[in-house]
Length: 332
Image 1 (cartoon, rainbow, N blue to C red):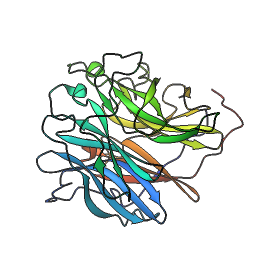
Image 2 (image 1 turned 90 degrees about the horizontal axis):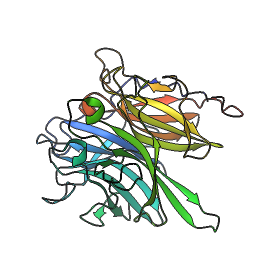
Image 3 (image 1 turned 180 degrees about the horizontal axis):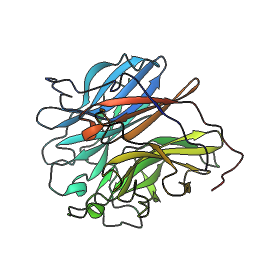
Image 4 (image 1 turned 120 degrees about the vertical axis):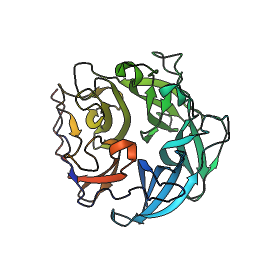
């Protein structure tokens, strides 16, 4: 198994907690996605108000200054009544394609269908990375496009996007995302079942070739219920992934690591040896759960953003790790 990252939590966590009385993030700050744009770090996240509605919000800080985020408010509100995103816009993924910023987000319609009430990933675009407009009131990606679950409805983002180049020189993109196949059930293995998947595009709008990548491992207590939110990046000659596991060990989320030589076939090792970040100490802001990882490079390591208890009710925090040494080849 390749060496895992050894995370050191930031002493001032959470760095972006909810603000009581705020019109856009008074009760929840979750799903961090950070983009470094020159000398500014832009932290996109989902904020919830007192009514429980969630929208995509933005905070900014000087690059590397995790203690200095300044909130800029909402950049995308929930959709119109009857739309797939009428209640929530969550799980932002932001990527520059051509000259435009693309903001992919997951919609929740407000139904009682459990995970099947998240019926699509939507898209909004921007010229400046600050002001976004929906390209359509409908989702551009739905959850019924893998061979293994052709009749599924639920889908969620929470991953990342990478650029590839085809043999003919054409630029194309990979989106890593969560396939949410759970249905309301007293059995948590049925109710919360999720898998990690990938799809592909040449224009950032039409996404095809959907493939299942990781599934729950029933023998591993930290991820025997679900795996979700695959954040993938290239590390030299390999791909690394941080993802969330839901398991009976804690009953909530922890963060695990996997590696791959091609971004499609992933190694997790034996048992829970790939556990990367467990819930924090009793009484801590992240004592119950750690979830929705996002990683950005730093000069001497990597910076992790994640959210804590209650799916962001305690806010967003960060951790730092130096890059582990990469071995000559995989050993597991």
